[in-house]
Image (cartoon, rainbow, N blue to C red; front, top):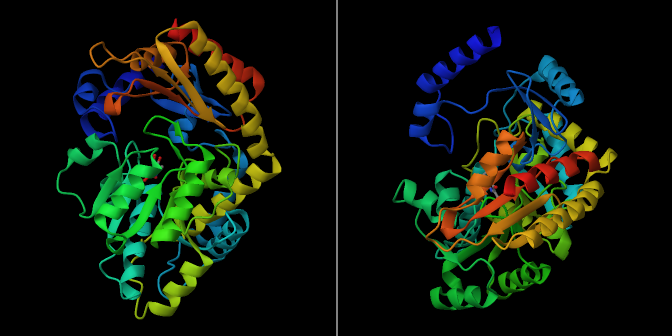
Length: 429
Ligand code: PLP
């Protein structure tokens, strides 16, 4: 009874005062939030009534080490008790930020050396685009300003990140975004080459891509695609920015998505799994050569920085989170469980003619329904049915797609994975 009353109060307050990110404002006014979670443990989230939900999305593809890890809370408390925050502007620094930057240089693709910290993935992408343009400016090639991104990509919601995002509804939401962003077919090397030739490489600063497109519907390009991108960027002198905001820190069964293709980007955007969501943090890593050249050519102040760049508490949490990922062997575990997840998805696909594709890598997977543009998409219905059965998934319906995506925490065990697959099966049915 008491729980009911508290829930009703919270729902009312939510409707009046809380503007939810990436949500329908009208639906919220009519129905209020569907779930108010109060606790998390492992792969599960628990609502007010104590009902458990298997978090098949790691919340926003980010809770890699699972919910309720006390050791992360303890590290955060210790850091807050000692030095919760200090600035990293100009000549100031702090120990967790230094140690994290050094750790990232050791675990990332070989060319990468130095990190600029942000509060999340959108800021990481904006930073990468600005640094790319700044780089060509100080190299006396100020015309190299354009950024090429892929269709179906998602790079976040800051002005530059939205401009790069290939999912058109995000760009149309607030017209007149940043200039000089171009979009190219998400899998075609030929289309990219043609676009560069048409625009002129002397006008292009960088190419940005997610090694596996996540929010756009889990599109896995072959490893050869990333190798080709690397060679094209070298050939035309474009900077290659890898957006590893989702694919970093073990998600795909390798430390980073680029590791599958054995390539090193010039810049790499990171966020999400770096702290598993226990504190907000993102960053852009720069290759040794880019870092050296920027340092050599960039006179005056680097006029780009966020209040929370190098936040000591977030960095301390990230260090501990990375230690957990390594000590618990979660990257190999994600690869093994990912194979089982994909097998399970393929088995479901075989039973239903309405499903035309099952795809994924590591603990990112998708089922694509056959959507002819006329019928109502099926993925949202399946997601709703799964929700009623205690499983959280997500539907992607942008760009005429009808796709269900799934990305459970890397700690998921076999029994939990079977539970996920069995709920999914009955929801599809
Ligand atoms: N880049 C990618 C590939 C993402 O998936 C996301 C978020 O989902 C972002 C960037 C934006 O990150 P954030 O929401 O932390 O700003």
